[in-house]
Length: 320
Image 1 (cartoon, rainbow, N blue to C red):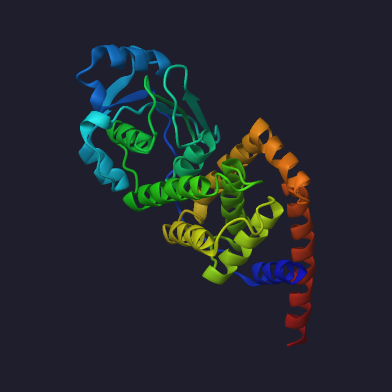
Image 2 (image 1 turned 30 degrees about the vertical axis):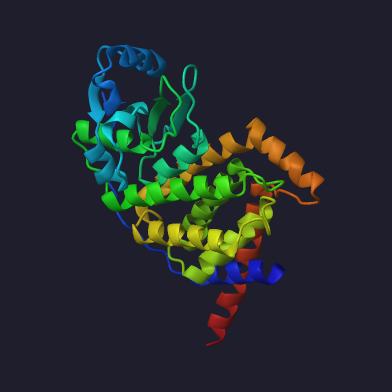
């Protein structure tokens, strides 16, 4: 473990800083409501869903169809099953990404608020208020397509590489969570925390420029810090590595876009660590003889260690 930490610190000290410009998010005057296609011919269901979403008369309204789902997330669904609906308004830069799932009538069966938030951050959406709802129980898998359709309705483009990465991330988190649903001590909230912390670590300490081996080391460290060491199979870990490398290749970890990602990720981490489900996960980890490391303490230690190795590197540079 110590050798891994030293390796990360030494590599971080020697990687040069890079930058990439990105356009800041533009604040919207009006929210956009996007209903699932199944609601277009069912006014009662649409009205019930509108109440759940908090729709206002000034909202721009649209529908997400099977072709949209195929375009944005590369999935095939018949219009009749598309009932997940969303309401979104893009807010001022720095305001953060807020996700609310209204389950007063129908449940989102597979995907948590934290998983949606992680995926949307990966797609490059960092400052917005998003409500997701359905008047009947749904899996919630098509909700992201509705968010992207909303940006189209506002005349703004979303990078298709980023939307595919976001969908891959969402599916990986939900798949791993389902596969480990009977594993004592595992929870989806811990997995979301791991993936969020991996992203932040890559931006803050590697300036977005990492190798697959370095990502694998970071993932292993974050799994251990969150009490998930030894719970995931190698195949599951490999899926996470692929996602992170694809996100890295999309350019999300560099430039101004990376700064916004880190800021919004901090909000997500605060939300996770203050949740009842995360406290339950900490309690279960303690029962199993594991520990969930305080992220701020771990970060402070890493910063101190990195500073130490930077001084050593500069010392040896001076000898030559």
